[in-house]
Length: 238
Image (cartoon, rainbow, N blue to C red; front, side, top):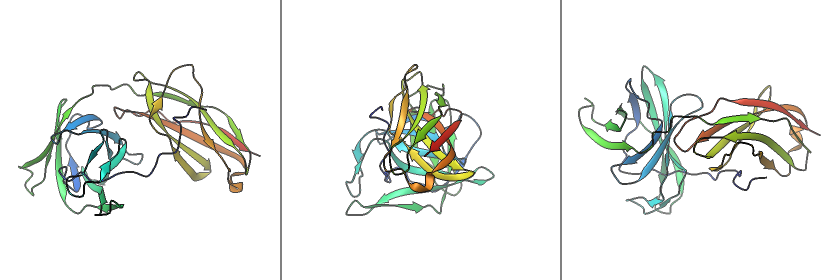
């Protein structure tokens, strides 16, 4: 199995200069894509599964306050839709010992996006720009992924098989297991995505509770924030 298809570590920390909480997103170009912030660091914006946006650090750097390391692919903000174009922003904060926890926001920020620039306005009247981004990637082509019928053994090994390809040749995947309702979710790290290659997510010590016939679905993301259509297949655990 491909070594890049591994469970992602829990990640994320607040980048102090990208302040803000709830977000109002105006009509126009989407923030999905790769952006360079005014602090010189690069961030990737993607769509959240339930709506809204997620922001990831794409360059390794340290926070200005606690000097904690921000690793590549670290989720730093989540923007949740509240209706009427308003989003709540959750930030991953680090304490002085670099232990992290999510902190839901309680302010509002207006985001304006053009094809090449994104601004955050953080005052109550939304007239003061507090942070800017410049778009660094123009990739708008989503990956193509296909789930393949897979098998496994309770207490043993299970491989969730799929094929994936993308014009950037690099993606990461979300894999969900269903027995009617969602019962397991896994994520891979960013890795190769080449047409004609078979990929898979390996589970060791498969839980006995998964025994039987299930469904697993996979959705693929590229580094520019494009998301594939979901593909599903059967999963049999003996």
